[in-house]
Length: 464
Image (tube, rainbow, N blue to C red; front, side, top):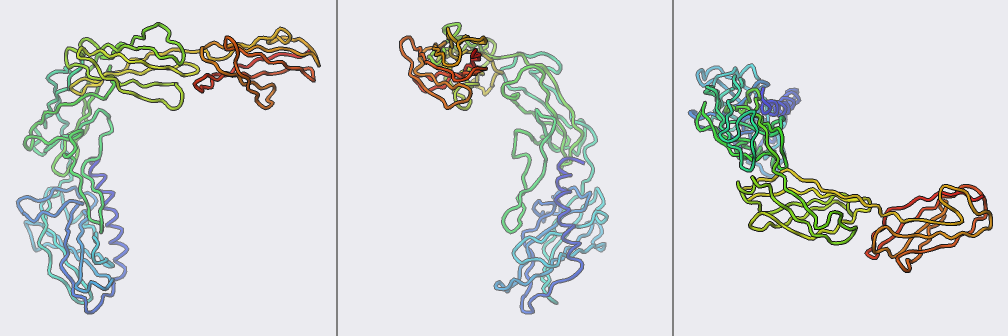
């Protein structure tokens, strides 16, 4: 059974439940309400076909949901009605099966389930509906025609590519041209494909106002579906691999018949060379929080195939949330822009290029680490050592490792923080006198003139 068939089977169970619940009793309807023939007829959540030569192909392995909107001439009453559905083989109109949906609300779809044993595979059927109110019944609707197809295509589709040979390594840069064929299965009318092995559901419906199904034709979405040029025929598609990919690529494909039953899934694999750009800063180690010019160079093969028109630059690890900017390329595919890196532990750039034909390269990563913690020094209370004593004052000097420091904030053993301004050479000194001996922890961080709170430093010492 195809994914689409499973989806329709789940939806159909709703109609089965409603029929079972309704079978116990039948509604009382207003005596003066004249029933009106149902409208908005659907089978398997697809529109009714009144053309016997063009039936709607449906999967009915668990029965088939049919529905229509009943009405009465008494528009002021909410009296419930019954909807009757009658189905028969086109080849034998005398062999009818009738199901009812009592307790139906006029103006809304009333679903019922035609049983699977009344709809053998491979045959064409007609069905119709009527509204029953009390002892009165409307005229029957015009027949709807359905062809039952519970059998999925027997063979997987054939797949070839004119520009990306299977199992081979290819340079990339151009869309992949695939030809899909039905492998001789005359029941195949289209194909479904994806770069992910879990293929989308084919042939489902959204439910609109008054319960009216809005069938989603899968072939309206060329990202995943294409029609064959004829039953049992072929189709040619042009696809870009997933953005930012290189290495092994696999396209997963299956055939679809007229009822959206899917064949078994097959695949086509090849290897894609990297088309990532080159990232070069104007200086080898850009300074923290200072603008630096970066130059982006396209992959030569990619540029010759389809010119690079822009670059996507994602900042990872900077201040605030990660962000992405676009940089336009020159006619030769290169680009330059000034970037400010302000990640207090370092920052990375993820850069990919976009070509005129829509190709997105895989990414180049460029990164740098920063130590933005302050330097802390004390002659009386040296780090990781003992010194001074109770009542002995000591001086702690804070010095920056990056430029632009405006102040320092410190705390001893978790006491309230104290902030002091940076002085000459962006340093600061504080005096501190202990009242008890023992181990102490001093936490210090700097803040820049632009308001960036830098990484903290943890300084431990012992008071003798």
